[in-house]
Image (cartoon, rainbow, N blue to C red; front, side, top):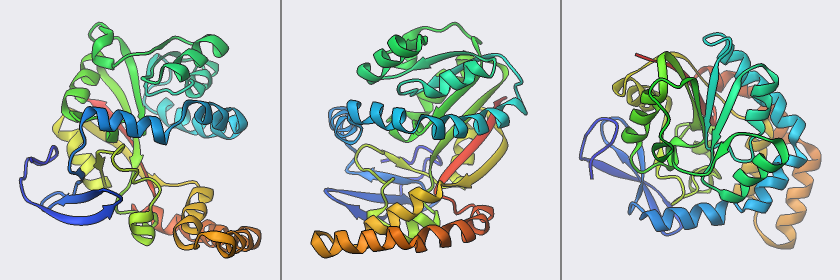
Length: 289
């Protein structure tokens, strides 16, 4: 095995999650799911983790929350690209595309889950392609912006994927990547119970430093990087990781939720660990060199 970030061949064991391990590169600290799952295993894990009906209902029941979150992304995007053609890779049912169109962008999506893609096309009248990006055949320099929210960590050949992204981006085009942070406070506290590990669906596990190195080595220049996480996700992951199952466990969870102790602590402390790049999510804006 060769590290896709730094080409090192030495690894150390880090965590065991169900039938898989997460090993880390000795040099750049990239986490890799081991044994590395086959394409079939990854697809099956994705289907089990992200049930189409549940995904659709989640987005629909929290549509205002997600659109507010997406507008924050678009505000950051406008710092580099005030307008233009946007491609969202892994767009799900297309709520980010809906929001981008409302903000004046010309938006197209790629989504491998056919049910989610079809939902976005039918219900939101979106341009969503149910296929892999490299199979779509976009012309060189088609897009001003490409977004990949929680996508890169699923792709076996990440270098090839980024090469295709560079090809379809215009000169000085903007790439936006978001994915989980293996060195976050959230991950460190919960260990193998961290909900965003999701092996074997997540093949790679980044931190801010090695993600930056990976993007730089693939022809991108980092313009802005931050870490963060929704406080609700932090507190619910904490509760899920440390509360026992069964009747007592359910009662204890209810008490914790009602008291909002974890949520309050997260709200007060998270700005500190965000500044130290310990937030649960890494969000990067990079331009094509």
